Length: 218
Image (cartoon, rainbow, N blue to C red):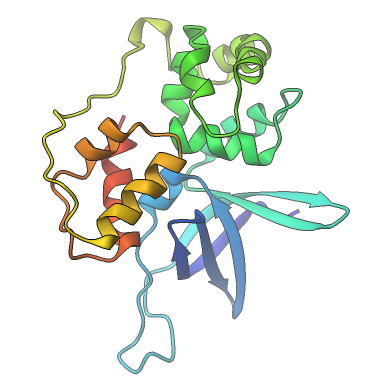
């Protein structure tokens, strides 16, 4: 089993939530959460463009082996990996649903909403219905309390979202970034607020990463 990857970022895809990490000359494509993607450094190359120049990073991984292939799921922290493994232990929750939930909620926020039995917040994740959210709460409430004792129900709060006063989109990149974030499960008002200070002339992926950094703050 591959538990970690340590190497340089070769490529990221904000729309697909994937990253390619080159380790000892081998590039591994990893599916990542929106939270992890927002924390990964941008790829850097030498002036001649022939080699990667960025600093190496370590990413924690879960390897899923199926009849039709092998997939790697990557996480910026051990905590996020541990929460992912708890999620996929729930009946009816596969890796894609687990990644979807953790792209909407950081491990801390997820622990808090589970403690509060807030199934509505969990069901906002794309591909996760009310019944699945209810199973997550039912099966994980005690496990999360045991594995994440640092989070208590007394601290349950909604993330701070600035007032939505952004100007209308000025570029295709801005509109594409907004649509991608909505697909991840954020409301248009949340996305608009998170994008109010971004430069619309930047590439779509850069805008998405900047907005995610705002949306995923604890």
